[in-house]
Length: 105
Image (cartoon, rainbow, N blue to C red; front, side, top):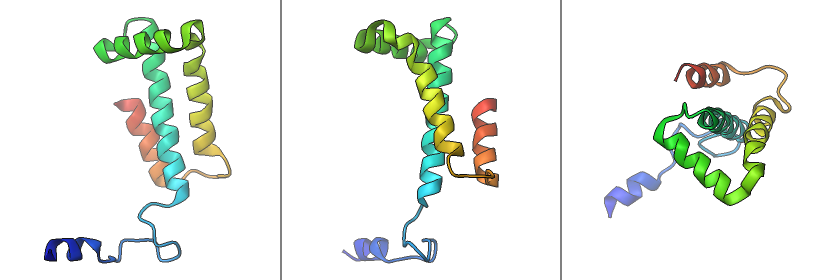
């Protein structure tokens, strides 16, 4: 039982003003990067360049949405960009690191 009491204690890593591990802005940025990544994989899957995962994703999109599946990557991209840049006049260093890692990876 001691293990659970140690894990449940507050640590100094939480944000002092909200008491949360990750700020809302960081969560939005992570969601935006994941949506952009999903969009890139979806677009590559249309040209059979995304491997088995992309082919499975394309099959699931076509089965679920029919011909609308061809427009979903654009929607994912737009929502992802919106999540990253909405209300932010300047991207933080970690946002740029995430974007670069997404492009390189």
